[in-house]
Length: 263
Image (cartoon, helix red, strand yellow):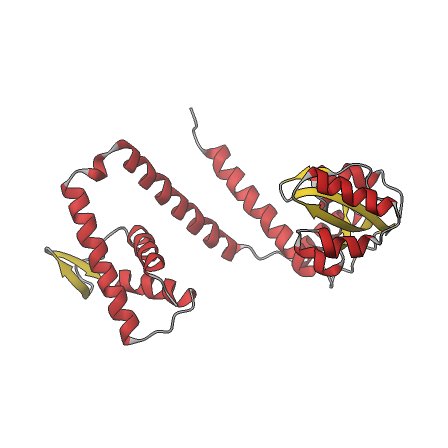
């Protein structure tokens, strides 16, 4: 269900996207103190509402029209009081407008990117070469709220307690349901605070000391290690497409930055 807060936010974004008012030639949804609110504004609000799971209906459209009118009344009063002239507000509006325009430009640029098969295969080869000697690690972990709890887990593991049982009983991480198993991971997929520790662990070993992360205090167990098998081009094609598109977007941005006169 669409909440009032979501509708107000959608209305605000719509007003920004549509440059506040539609052209006078468009059939207005409403007229507030002489200001026409064009149907384009309503179209944006409806699109946002449908994207959030609403069902198009007469009631929804009436609710959105009321929100649109309310927002216009409030905005007019804010301008009458000169709030739109305050430096902080002007700065915030400029930043939001630039962010929206930037996202729109990048989205339009994305539509133009059509990577050739040759470029995709070249990117696949580049990634495959980088991973030629890579290893992947099967890791289990236990996350606790305090360092003392983590140290108690390490002691229990050294005393012979099964790590997966400890994880299911002691871990505050959702992985506890699976005995703390994180599956197979490449080194660059592992939290940077943990990767150096993992690289120096022996298979079957448990960390000697807990490691503090944003999630909590972590205790790791290296279950297995193996050479990484690079997937075929066809199996990883979508990932390669995403990588090529990301590279081309970055090149496009850099080209614009290079051409810009920045002082």
